Structures are given as C-alpha cells and as structure tokens.
Image 1 (spheres, rainbow, N blue to C red):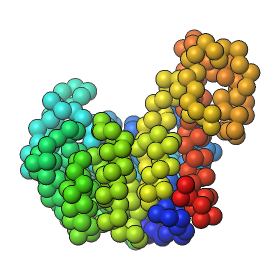
Image 2: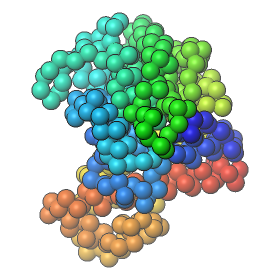
Image 3: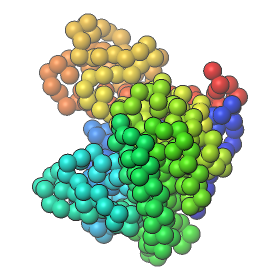
Image 4: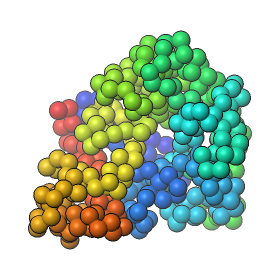
Length: 374
C-alpha cells in the first residue's frame, strides 16, 4: 500500500480521516503510544493489539544508540525486530538531542553530541537521521529539526526556524534518493511491492511567536511533504500558549494532508486539539503516569497510591471496559503499588492507554455524527 490520506468527515474544524501506510490503515484523529526503546514500557505487543493501538511511535535517538539502527536493519527492520506488524512512526532524534543541552554542539552540518549512556561522540545530520529512520523501516519518518528552547527571544527563534527549514530541504532530498531502501521493501518480502515506501513529514517550528509559526508553516509547505507536524510545543510553555501557536499554524497546513502535533498531551488537551483539526498526537503521559500510580478516569485523575483506596472494591473507572477495570479493584491496584510489585505499572499503564484510545474513539465517532464542536 502506498501512503495516502483522506478526510472522510468533518465537524467544525475537526476531521475524521483514513491514513494508509505500507503496514496498514489508521483511523484519525489518532493517539500514538510512545515505544521509546522498541517497546511501550511494561506492555507486550499482543496487549497493545487487543487494546486497539493502530500505530506506535519509535524513538530514533535511543534506537540509534542501542541496539543500533544498522542492527535493526539486519533484523529486517523495526516491525520484525519488535514483532509489530502495524504502522510505526519514528521521530528524527532532534527533540532528544535538544534535551541533552550541555552534551551537544549545534552547527550548520548537524548536531554533535555525547551519548548520555557512555559519553561517546556522535553526529546527527539531516541525512544521517533520515538514513537511521530508513534503516529502522518506519512507515512515517520525520525531517530532522531543531527544537527551539523555551523561552527564547525572537531573533534566536528565527535563526532556529531558518535552520530547521534548511535541514528540512536536506532531509527531503536524502529521503527522495533513498526511500526505496527500507528493509521491508526487499525483493524477497512477498508481502511488499516496490511502491511500498515510507513517507517523510516536515516539521513546523517558530517557537512562541505566531508570525514565525505562520512563516514556518508556509515555507515548510512550499518544500512539499506528504504530511506536516507541529513541533516545539510542550517544552514548558503555558497551555494557552500551545493553543495559540496551533491556532496560528493549522489553518496554513494543507487540508488534504495529515497534521501531527508532537508530544501532547492530557486527555482533555488531545480532545481540544482534535477539535482544532489535528489528526495525529503522541505523548508519554499515559505510560509515565501509570508507572507512577496516576490513573486517568471518567471521574477525574486517581492517584492510586492514596490510602483512601486501600479498601475500595470498585474498579479503577466504573465507566471503563478495559481488561483492568473488568477484573481488578482499586484496592488491589493500590496494594500492588504499595508493595512495589511490577504488575502495578503493567496494569496502570494498560488502563491509561485504554482510556486515551477510548477517548479518541469517541472523538472520531462524534466527528462522524457532526457533533464535535463543543
């Protein structure tokens, strides 16, 4: 299957669509769980399938360091390596390198950084970051970008935006020359055809300046990509600022191409962003919160560590039909967390993922009914 996207229903600015990738179709708007190290922490792949996960996000920076993207390529790509046959999106590693702060040096060529694992030196460029993602065999790749620090003055933000635009053009050139080299497109794979190639998304930057966001969007669209991401958000700015930047950016992105907002958000936020016309979102929050005992429910957040839950018979969320809520009590989950049992993180994470996925299902349903403007 070649890459394509089609909007099938709208409600206000919200869109319900269908994203077609070489490893399957994705209904949008979609939430993508984060599989940083080729795994969604604590949750096996068959459980993710049972929950209805359509697409996972893989982390190029971490997989580049361990086990190495060349090794993953020799194993047949990330899908085979991690036994996941549904779509995968990989980030470029730009955000992780940005977060290294004092361990990196930025130049026109790329980013030189020291590994957080052993201090070894590496250089990521638009070309090498794109090649790493091709080696991983992702269905959707991201152009290499610089995530602008927050807060940053306008002059610095413009310089960062201009660098991202130059890197976007280089990423696209390299992708066009090498996109047919993905490991799952090999001639001996009978399930694939020569037309099955990954898609490369461009990334809009521009910090917290609406005019720069609009300029970045327009110029990124001029470069031309099959899809567009909005990066540089959820980096410490107030949430109202996040929405302001999205409002400045989204109207300038093509309506017939998927729109992906990177690294967001809470359940309430992903609903608001979907209503604004966002098609794809990812966030570590449901898995990270679950490992720390925080559950998202229809009744609000539940800190399962609390003593108040020690003798509660009811499920984590009475309105939830996930495997955890069908079987276990709040008292049991609280006990597991209190005694340090690893199963606590597993069950909490499964519930949180189910809550996020169900939230997106309801949003898609409301869009199709024409009732997603509230």
